[in-house]
Length: 179
Image (cartoon, rainbow, N blue to C red; front, side, top):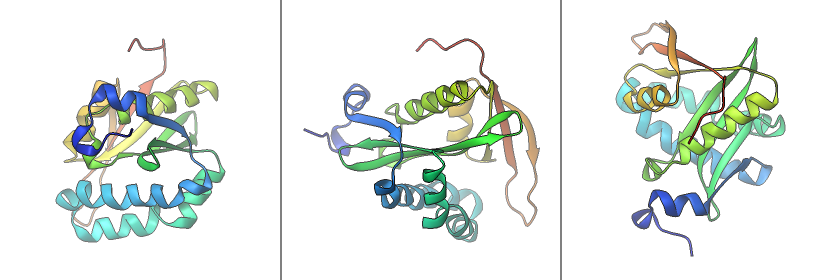
């Protein structure tokens, strides 16, 4: 039996959530995660125009399908619902984590950590020893999440137009972590 959002606890989720590489059948679920998380996450920080621009640029069928085909998208699935997404890829000497989103009703259950662990594993398997990422200034939940997982700020980018800065972070992949 699958737990409902009201019944979810971290231990129950660990047994029921499957983290795996995305396939074509996950497309609608991945896009749904993007639309549901972007509105909740970015509208208070950067406004509705930023949300609309981001959804149109990074959460379309074409963009998501391309990342799935390249093997750069992971999903966290609970029952038959995609509840979390991570997208990553090589750039220069690192793996860049482009997206890591978990549906708001599933925060705090370890799903984001499981997705991150799998990104780290994939980076190591591909011979990379560093992961980089960015988040928008004002996204305190992301700042705490990444800092707890060993990421440190490297620099900031100012996009202009009154938008918040992008805070870039990196983590060296040394010894395996103890969970």
